[in-house]
Image (tube, rainbow over all chains, first blue to last red; front, side, top):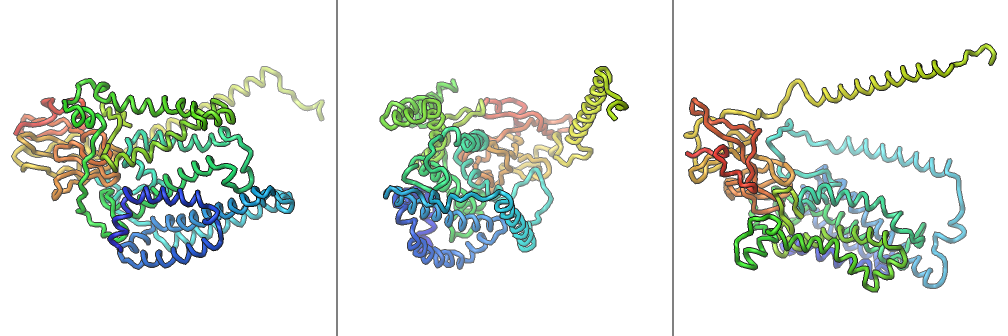
Length: 358
Length: 166
């Protein structure tokens, strides 16, 4: 059983599993979003968590001071996700029956003063959070290591826990892409949401039925591409950033056969059986064409489809193209990861001469 | 009250304004120069950019880690060539480790792997490790100059300064 879990936890297998679980959760949110399901899930998760923790090896990883926030995060994200589905399922049932959402009932629309209602709540939250942090700082000591040395790095060298998803992303991308462009697009995209999404539905109440695209798209990026990657980066990446299953000892000498190949090598050496052309742009021509096609041909093609036409009618050309670009950039991450796992593909466009790799 | 109050005339107002702006500008410039000074510390704990790395007969075939912790350089002797390999990963600038059992350099940050020669073969590293300028002094000592880099993808490893024939 433990061997099987170790084997399954490898991102090659766990990523599709997580995607399928996400799909099932969103598809059958009316079943997931019930109290009965929550109790059943807890009855399953708590013994499983205890069983995982009973492994001395995994336990030492769990109680690393750096990893405790992630455990708290998992609990919170799990609960809040269920809560969203629960509220959405409740509201969607009412909306189907022609009623207003629960948040729209007269007793929930009562207005109160910001002072003192909100300000007091905020004050208590500030005090509680400060107490929590003080207690935490007393209980879990920050690890004291040797003086910094520019010619030595700890092994594994891990980012702060909230950036571990980003660090896991960097394994599949050029530093420029995963370190600057994609996080920048994430931030800009999140800022842009209120300007792109002008649909008033779902404002102030939970619903999935009325906003399927927004809910699916956002939750996929959040749960699968951010939270899941944080879990992988925290618990499943050991020395040398090699993958280790949850029940596997972090052996420094674990050897993983891995040899990554650029798309240009696939084309010229394996495909056409010739040597690589000298000109770097000719060498990478396939990758360049594919990348440009992905960015410039796909959006108009999607716009011409029935779905795209409906979207443009609703939100206009400008918003449509920004939305599609953001969506394509988000999807480039899982696409690249799957290509890496299936074909050991390193870069689609590899121009190290120009520090440009995609 | 208003009759006794001294009014600022236009000329006085501008002279005060000028003094205020000059003072503000001077304060900003002072802060900026302090910040600039701060980026050039009195004592620098970074490794020296130029150092003497013994004599060529000191080195066995393979990777030598003697100057790694002090200067951030692996001395590698391979196929009759001795070269000074940078220990900075070309992916995001972490410090890889030399794994003698697997005969490879492996970066602990994102798992990039390099052969003994410095050529990248696994993980996300986009290009091989860089080599530093290496030459012999008049006394027959090896001098490594880290200010001059030689990059494989630009065909610079064949440069006579990038290696020593031993």
